[in-house]
Length: 471
Image 1 (cartoon, rainbow, N blue to C red):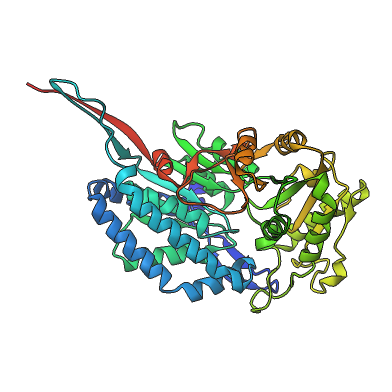
Image 2 (tube, one colour):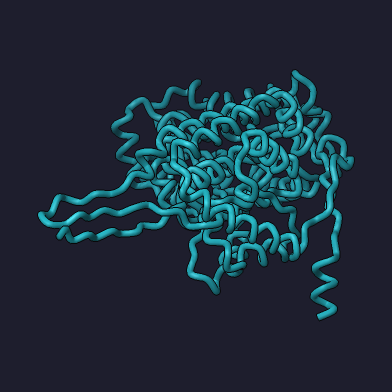
């Protein structure tokens, strides 16, 4: 008993290290089991009342919260940069994306949450309600800290659930900003809460019987940990676990358009995007020209302090992440790959720091981990292929299946190929973008479940049938 009480009372401190300079940006005490119990008790009580609030009223609360959040967008953009290193010139775009998704989900909620009414049957009234699950746990990552979390927070609340957000230790101020916005909007107390937790206590949190659904974005290892934690309950978890996303440049592609967009798709956010481009297959007839243009455009990036306006490539999130990518590049080169970018062109790129030059590798193949394992950094491998069939085979030769992109001026041909590609989303002539009207989902080790679109609401409700015989 004494051990349990000690665990309830003990508080550890977690520090957020900014990749900009390696200094401590913020620190806070971690919550413990006692805090989890209090938060879930309050959430459960608040949800029972919230589920009876009309959808139109719920939406009004969320509109006010969104407005409150966006009123601080300049400060928030700077916080994103300081916490995880994305260039300040790009951080504001995350807030625009958050607004787009939040407003879309509020707009479609009435139809997405409407009753399902089957064909009329004389003497009976029959319908299916979409009722809330209860308390939704959201475990969010640092790489797109607002975009990944809004996918779950807004539809969960719209559907009548309570939400408890556990955000990454790298971006803890995101959770604070959400809490401030919901408080400013007057959201009922207990309905949206946050927790700062260790890995072990996160497992205890999602395993608690009062949690009815888990929305997790992170690594494959983390996804397995979530599944293990909830294995004694009959609940679902939405798992978005990243990818090794491919692109195929067909012989008829617009070369300049493909190069420009794929360079951005590979190196935006220092390559730290779940749906970023990590491997490219180019038809033999375009291969040489594509590689030259791709390398030249890559050399135009400016790596530096992300708070400087002219910088478009910031540090990776941690020194250890940059070290991993460096090791993967060296391993590929040792196996026969050729690196096209001279790292001395990027003076800020130094061993022992989070700053890493972008890299383009050719003479690669699928015996190399750089082409098969997620590296989550500013490096991309480019392979030559002879035809569509070879491209599709290589694109599908992966343990992941989040997104894929096809570059062609024949969109009909692109759609035929899209049917053969094993992924949750297939782009034609674009990449690395989430349309809130489309389901965001993955297969294989990219996870399971769905957010965004009207389908995304299905995971946050359960069907309840009503069968009335009229007398």
